[in-house]
Length: 233
Image (tube, rainbow, N blue to C red):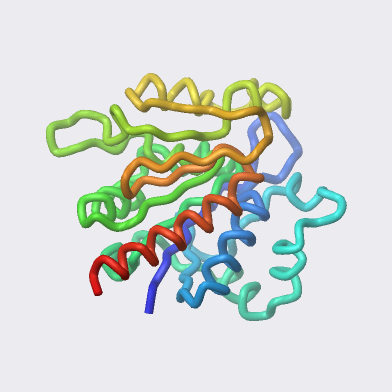
């Protein structure tokens, strides 16, 4: 059985704004069902554990993405999201892949997070899949190699762009601009058109640019896991 760990933010507010933040629902729900429908076992976790906060803006889409509506109607998924495990209480090596969805909440509790850093480095060093979308790559900030260099230095990735941040008028609300910060850490950030699907694959590190990238990213994760099983057979 293939086991996938999804870890979300636990952060709920944007300072200076009345908007509720958290995970972007499409970025959680779409990969969740892509993994489930592929026969994988999925564990939902968050930074602190407990109820996973949902970014209010992601509930305002009309119509709601089919995956979000499916999640709303799925008692098992709702139960898992209301009682998520704390990433600090989990062992990364129990999983074949870790997936980090975005949402603006990640900008506060993903960077420099020791538990996330341990999970990410453990998975990458073991040759397992690490995937992240939109603001999720904030988790890579502050993660270092044994020699003290940034983990993502020289790695080809993508993320929610500075232009996209400005387009949603939150560039003056977030604590930093993600694309610029990842570039400053030495990442080779490749971006596509604003708000269009775009993913990058660099070995076992897979990333997506924005919410619309969550579906192709999830399929890329499933394909990579299948390829590894065939190689191991």
